[in-house]
Length: 477
Image (cartoon, rainbow, N blue to C red; front, side, top):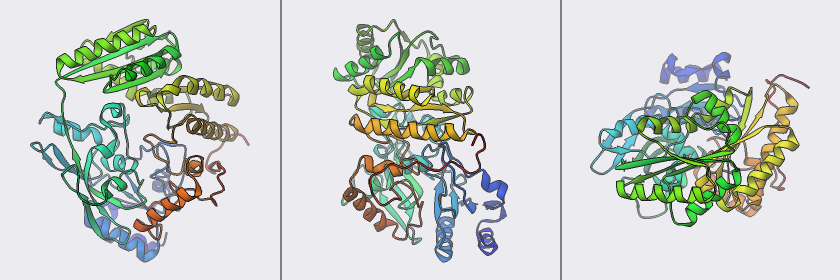
């Protein structure tokens, strides 16, 4: 990048607000995915007007802009695929208001998800979306990817909890969408913006709704000797009209890796466990818990444990939310997938994934949101080995195709980004994709914001493509 541009950015933000040295840029070539792409500069705005001026400068010098939160994304959405400026929102991290009476909060995009719930707790409130990266991911990133989490089953994804946005458009204009009301007249532009993966605008303020903390919470751990019995339990629970606040599944390999790291009390000799939670009025929560236990036992659960207190509940959830870190202890690399299938297809899909693992020669662990069929297979591989990297990507593409064949979709909460944009023709016709391009062009006509994401870069032939092996990776030829 020209030194002239760096100097202008430093005049705007100060020298501490701009990174451009090769060693600093290297740190921003990655997020939580297996993708890799490097920016030309990283900037740290502190206020809305900084964002406006950065966009104006990018327009003047014809530079692309990529918004970035905490970098915990799992689809390459926060990577600068075509270079340019990465706009990191970590310093725009203020909770501007908590309106407890109306159960609303107004936050800047760099506010960490869990910090918002902690701040709202003293009012008896919390923010429901809870990704596994809740301790580090930011609200702006949650909005960009329409993130979910274990409690999506009962409470929905981020779009169900955001009522208003302030955004900076690609022409540097500031607009407000929605407000504090749940519904506003006209087109739902707030909803359209959520999940657009930073390709429409840059979010500078978010208005969210807060929920009241439940009176009672019951956490259950059902233990199975058969993966099929566990998945059958999930189908039966929901078929009976019981909607747990959360219903998570770990297969035997994954729970053993987690137990070695977290010591959450998961049984080492089981084929699978279901971690479930019900909440609400005390009597209702107790009744639902009893009903779930009955269903699990009917489907051959060898044991169903109830968390005895808040400490045990927190430990079980620590096991679930730190599962990816646990896997990182036993493999040089792992590739986290994200697909959705109907709950009734859980068993055949998991069996097919096991076949794919054997065919490609990988261990694939399974940990996922069983209640809504949102799978997260973990492919263990060594990124230093070129052949392993190529095969891991191929196995991932095959699993995504399997999800679509089963009547599902390519992503439940991680987004498309640059990981799955070339797989979009598996789900959409060229007419569908062309309409999406027109919608994007209405907001981002020059394509300056987060280019190379979401939509295929090919000619629309419908073929799936894999990204080339990163040049910086070593290993076998």
